[in-house]
Amino acid sequence: MFTLPPDESQEVYDGRPCVKLADTSKSLLLLLSWCDPRCVARSVDLDDLQLALELADKYGMETVMKHLETSMIGMKDTISARPVVMYAIAARFRLENLAHAAAKVTLKTTFEELATTFIPETRHITGLCFISLLKYHRACATEAVNAAKNFDWLRRDNQDVIFFTFSCPRGNSCSTTERANQLWKSWWLKYMDAVAVLLAAAPSSSVSDIEFIANFNTEISKGGCQPCCQGGHKKLAVFAKKMSKEIKTRISSVKDISSAVPVDNID
Image (tube, rainbow, N blue to C red; front, side, top):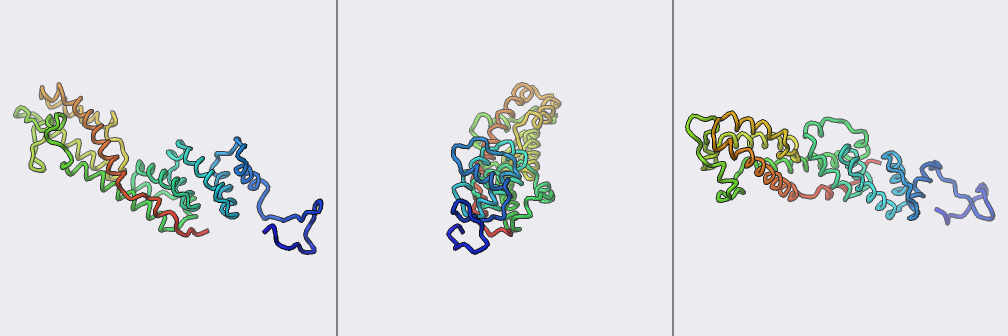
């Protein structure tokens, strides 16, 4: 662009041809600020960042785009509050690492909300990109729910697990129920069923949250079973953390969403 031969109407300053650009002075200033490694006063406003990305993409400035991506990945609070927006920006400009970080945070959002809430930034990406995000959410939910429904991963000889198989005194509401060829405490099974429902909607939901397990602590207490009342609350809290770790492991095994990002966008 800068080496094109000048025409008669081109302005010249100090013997140098002036190349006129259609970009605004604001957008060019934003772009140039990201070109200068000494610059520290970089904007973290999403509109400004998208403007800088547009120009960096327009002029093929890959290094600048990488700098912008690194900065945006560090915006943890923004990703947490607006994960779909960040995913859409990442998909639009083919920022794979940012797309992965944002997609992972969307797992805290219910599938219904994800699929039905209109986000203006998604207008700049293809339907395939957004469908890939929904499929990733569903795949993670399937893996997470399977941990709550299939008990094969539980070591039956583990002391924390054995506790949930002890038979309770006859007549208590925490009596045992058979599932997967094993007797389990009924209140523990209620916890696992509730976990499955929670994860089906949002696979990264907290299953060890104090408020979430409070209802099951109430279930333990009202059973009036001495062994459960004495050890059940603590055992459930320990198991909930174990469950959270298992869920994270299963979600991490799902195919990386970034593989779906480098598709043609509609701009």
